[in-house]
Every structure is written in structure tokens, then in C-alpha cells.
Image (tube, rainbow, N blue to C red):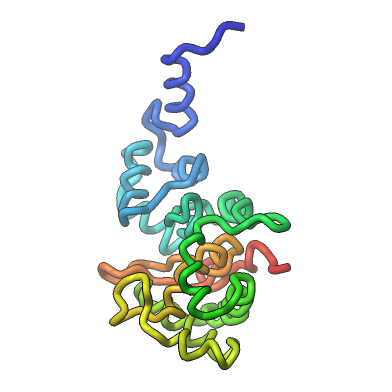
Length: 226
């Protein structure tokens, strides 16, 4: 069998990503589900959808994500925000949960915080998972506020010896607004997203909002904790 040509490879990729033709607006959910649509910078996913289905206007994209909620936005591939079909959430999130002793993806930078806190990764993740259900009845505006709110909820669950460091200024930048605890939470939010515990809500002006998967979709968490 002859090797595929460059043109054949290019054509295959364009077809797989639905960039080989103009598609109908009614196919929007199928188009999003082909590989998910990354939404960084904000608005990128709407542009990606428009490039595939020009008849799908911004108002249509907003309705599917924020009103019908047939789509959901969560941290996924590359640890980036992705817009996904709600019915296919497990396809884009659950495979990023490691098996056995594999490390969590996109969390390597947490080491400095763990060292300052004298705590283990799994210990902190378990504490965060315990408080995530509080998002079931609320929406939090801005990522910085989400980090610090979750950090405050976690603090009573931590060893007393670690709490002073938990409240200390972050070593990752913006120490005037971020604590070490808030920085640790920021790294741990990706694992929580992969387990279906946190998603993006509707934007509030220029700020993103966050809530639980259950609160946003009115569905049970897509992946039960072990």
C-alpha cells in the first residue's frame, strides 16, 4: 500500500476537524464534539464554531452554552478551557484522570507550594474534593476569587501546623492577592475539572464565573470519586 501523500493527509485532517466545508447551524453540537473547542483567549470557541458553520451566530453559540446548556465549558486538554457537548463530558474529562500511580497532568508547578506546606499532593486534593460540593448552590465570579474562596473552605481540614503557611503570600506571583493556599487550589482545579466537579459558568462582564458541574447542567457528577 503506498504511503499517503501530503495532500491526502491535509485533506484528512481538514475533514476530521470539519474545516473542509460550510456546515449547517443545526450541526453545531456535532461540530463542537469532534475534538472540543478551546476557549483561550475567551471567545476563541465562538470563532472556531463560526469558521465551520457560518450560519451559527454569536447569539446561537451563547444560547447553547449559557441557556440550553447542551454545551459546557471546563478545563480539559492541555489544562485549557474547552467547550464540550454536555452529553460527551466524560469523553473529554475522565480520560485525563490518571490510573494507579500515574501523576496528574498539568500540575507539576505545585511542588513549591507543597514544600512550603509540608503536605502531600493527594492529601490536598482530597481536602479540596471534600468542599467542592459547596459550589452546587452558588456561582463565584473571577478565578482569583474562586481560588481564595476554596482555600478558605479547605483551611479547617488541614493540619494546624500548615495553616499559617496556607495563608502566607504566594511565591508564584501577585502575593498581594494570592496566598500559598490559593495557588495550591489553582493547580488542583484541573484534577477537579477532570472529575466533573467544577465548570465555567456564564461570563460576568469581563470576568469568568465558576460553579459545579451539577449546578450548571442539573445532572449528576459525571465521574464518581473513588
